[in-house]
Image (cartoon, rainbow, N blue to C red; front, side):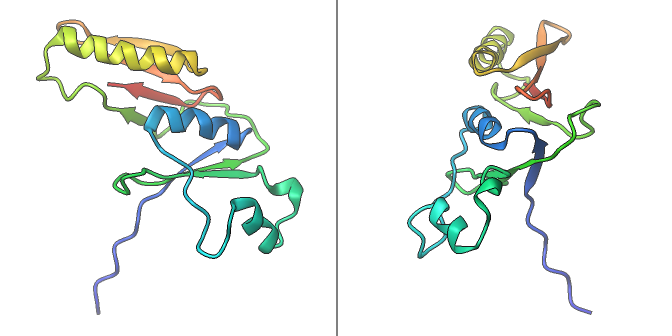
Length: 149
C-alpha cells in the first residue's frame, strides 16, 4: 500500500457577508484576493464563464497569503447566524513569543488590536499572564472569536 499524499490545509469561515468579512480578515492577516485563474481577466468574467448566477456572486470570498506559506481562507455565506463559541479559533501571533520583553509584547498586542477594533472587531476578554497582559480575545465583525497574542 502506498502512502497517501498529504492533504493541503485550507481554512473556511462561515459567515453572513463574505465580501465584507474578507476585507476584515485581509487586514488582520495581510492576505489578498488571488488573481483569477489563467485565461480569465477577472473573477467576474470567470463566474460568468462558469455559469454562476449573478445572485450567487457574493456567496463566497477567497483570500491567500501573498507569500504562499500560510493556508488559504475561504469565507462562505450560510443562512444561519453564529450561535455559540468557536470550537477552533485563529491566533494572530504578533509579538514574537513570550521571551520578548513584556512591555514590548503588550504594546504589539494592543497596537494590532487597536487596528482591528477600528475595522469592526470587539474585545471579548483581556487575559493576564504572570507579569501582565498575555493576550486579547477579540471577535470579528460577525462574532467569530480569535486571539491577538
